[in-house]
Amino acid sequence: MKNIAPSDIKGISDLILKARSIVITTHVHPDGDAMGSSLGLRHYLLNKGKQATVIIPDAFGESLDFMLAEGDRDYIAVTKNEKERCVDEVAKADLIFALDMNSFTRAEGLTEELYKATCPKILIDHHINPDRDAFDITVSSEEVSSACEVLYYVLLSMPDVNSDPAALPRQCATMLMTGMTTDSNNFANSVYPSTLAMASGLLEAGVDRDWIIGNLYQRYREERLRLMGYLLSQKMKITPLGVAYMVLDKKEMEAFDVREGDTESFVNLPLGMEKVRMSIFIKEDAGYARVSIRSKAGTSANALAKTYFHGGGHFLASGGRLFMPEDISDISEAGAYIETVTEKFFNDEN
Image (cartoon, rainbow, N blue to C red; front, top):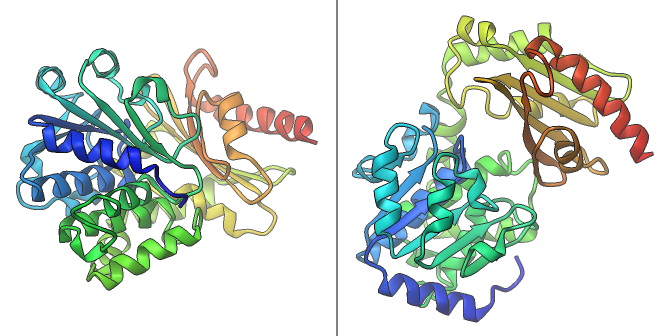
């Protein structure tokens, strides 16, 4: 990762030192990177004698419950369930951190309050087009694996850490490794020299990667694996242009008892086929469908997401939404929509 400006490090350090009430927030449908960076920062601050509240727009999947240390749950507020508490936390905050999102628009349910807050705001992220005008300090880079990686190098530069990963609190270090592992798909994509240097530093500092891998990838429910088999055998379609897609509707989600986080990484599976250059996974939600897009080198998932799915992200990994009935009348039309827009997208690209 490129050097972080010393003035930004000093600014962050000074603001933390002065702060009495700190809020950490992240994006809607928080994933491993969102929770890893948020909890990692919370434990770093806790080690410095600071207490921080983590505000998330909606609940994270139960598959990430293992990331919570003793006391963490008391300091996590969910906007969807506790709007009044979250508004109060933002109102009294004298420092706000935004992690793993490029703007407050992704903090659904609390966007207006976060923009209006008058306290200093710090953005630590890895997505394109960060909303720098909304923050006093922005540390953002696209050429990293994750927000956890950016935060790792920020914390490594703090005076009390002084470039020594072993000086990070153990729970902080473990959360950073966990989030980076999930966002790099266990080192399968978005891996840079700085990513491997981070992993090496944290391993040398004593982070138990076996514990992380065991919790992330070896404790799935049976229903998840049966759903995976169903999607690959019954639902996956591949277009002549090499676009694989799977659409999961509400009835199927109920039949397989799908819970938040159960479909994580499914979008990556079709990329294992040589003829597939892009994979799209769509899951029905209330009034819209969530869209995940992954691509191989040379094909921009981000461009497709921005143009046709109200989203964006990284070159090879992006997401978005399809609204009903604005984009499609109902979820049954999602497949036809994908085939139409991807054909146009690749023709335009050519």
